[in-house]
Length: 359
Ligand code: SAH
Image (cartoon, rainbow, N blue to C red):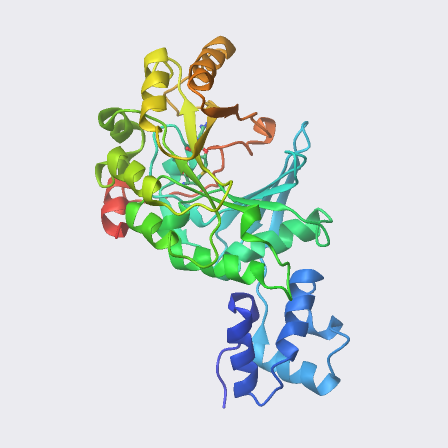
């Protein structure tokens, strides 16, 4: 009987155990496989020396292990490192290693492109080409950990690369479960931050997840009108509804929601905006992360002066809001926020794509 081999990279450990069971192979080998693939970064079954030869032959005929291929590797003057990864269908994504911030952080993608089309983001200009699979999302972490010598070290993961994680909900959460396995990389959900434009049904689902990452919400504006202009999904999920979902979001002790706010010169960075932002966040356990725009050709906004950024931050701080200003990293290699983009676009307009894809 011939059938296409299953991809081990797409299986949670329970699924892998069931697949082995079905072949009459003892389930405990799933843990060994997970250790090789995740913990040791080895996907070639012939190198899995604690498996018997006949078992290796069975595994080779039944399974493949797909891993994103590194086709670009750039290091910034600030040590940020950007990998361009090619997937099985030759599509490309980007994954970024940001050292010492203060922990080591991997910034990974959840989609090829993005359908959200935020007005200041280059990835948004690509449109959405496709969702990543769980194996492709987790695979970025395997590749980054191996490439940076971090397989045996704790690291943070931010879902802040290309794509909108709540727009690819199931694969994103499955990837987190795969990365969480104690037999693999054992990444604690406390070390993972999911960043979203605020797709309300997705936030509500996330609120019920057993394995819940930290939450970051990309706010970027303080009025409905302005947010709709900058973050088009606001039309469907207005600011008020996003904040309401945040108010209801169950937070662990000591944890808070991070609100990201990209500062655009003369657009959303006035003292009045800052005061309105403070009022909107009243009653939410929150902190604010200000991101001065990373400008780029084709983006019709400017980065505000440092004085404007400080003034905005001070107004929030005066109102007892914890605020940080994100230092932009890797701009020289286009690895900074909103600069991840790979060649090849979609023919559909962003609006058409949102209409097609929103739940
Ligand atoms: N789609 C998710 C994940 C992307 S995270 C989200 O929107 O949250 C990337 C973060 O960088 C978001 O907060 C995004 O708004 C911000 N960003 C996008 N373009 C940027 C730019 N040109 N300069 C600075 N930050 C930008």
